[in-house]
Image (cartoon, rainbow, N blue to C red; front, side, top):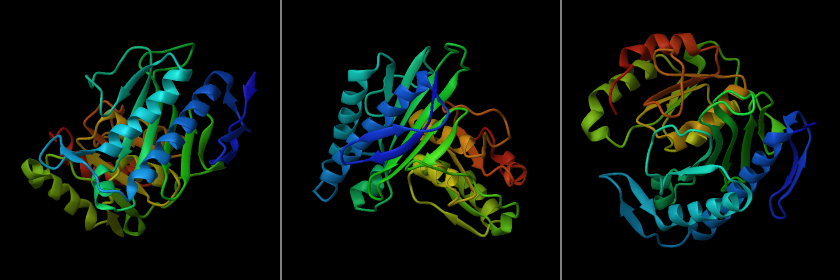
Length: 294
């Protein structure tokens, strides 16, 4: 039996209808992901205007009470409805690709933004197969990125498409980089890695129409899927930063690789995503930075 994707979502009452081709075995994972993301988003908005308890995991790598509370909310929903493993940013003990199905979770992507009151942050949840399962290849199969400030729920299911609040989304068809809007980010090791990171930035900025560095990779990828930017690159990210976003982009018609156009997984150090039409040119620019440590 095949069901269909999200047609209607009432975020207050969490009514989720299913309307286009989603395999039944993934429809349940999609419902769980949407429910968990919305629950976490409510936590983030409830705490958003309050003073924050800020701790440092690194020189410029923050964690707040909201990260922890959001992760608790996501886990509460998922563990009540799924037996799959969990890899979440604030509690993960390993970055090794797991075997079997796993939920890869960023409870608050854009923590620095959140702590400063800059309204560009999200919850990212991916249902990921570490190994082939029931005839499905390994990799992300369900992805959700939720921006609570805008009440925008981006979702994707492998082979079925990508959506924003239930409506199909597509990457742009822009094929002229000089007219393309790019997004990027800087690694937390920027103070030690600044030379090559800035060289890469300079290499793209002189070719593109513009570059945005907003500070939440999962949301950058969601916006790429929705056609708001034409490409994105960054190094030094973690699996929870890109797992859901990778699926959003590919299901919206885009391409995701490493800087040298190699196959990509969220467990790699670098990511280059685009609408597809600009990908070869971006690879030509960024392949010189392939394999740089961040």
